[in-house]
Image (cartoon, rainbow, N blue to C red; front, side, top):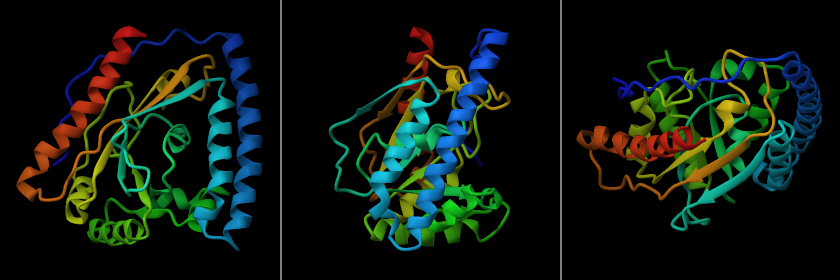
Length: 258
């Protein structure tokens, strides 16, 4: 059963204007041009080079993608996040640019976990296959076992994992229900979890709207790692609550003060 999310009020955004729509069209044009060129180059390089050797280009791509939304970006990383240790980064899920917003916050190579149906997308699907992204099928009874195996292989290589524990994008700006499966994987692999909270992105772009709103501050908070080694299945609710508390505090503070 998913960890229940407390009821939070929806974040109210100002109505769209004609000027907003015109600016958004221009930003979409610039962003898609950047995405197509950079992703195509990475797909070509993945044929000859391991994905971690293309990190410099991926970081350029992700930073550029966020910049082309007209947003100001910064990262706040707890000093206890070790750049030489592999983690499972659990991030709140707002829009399709979440991985771009978070990727450059730390120097870790981060392998993604995506729904298998996303691999059918033009260009993006080729990119994910070349990069080694882990596909998941929620309705497959073997999904958790397959994720456990693939995640273990990545961690053994010193790769971190970037995961959205809600499993879907928020409709309110606040955290949705957490899916317990990814927490069980972290426990089984004894992988430390870094709670990652991105604020500002819901105002930039949200599910249900194609509008990009420039001019907001996007901040990535990578809080202190939460250890899973030594925890048992009975500790799962507490582990989920620990991660939720950190992320919810960041979001609640942001929406109270912005």
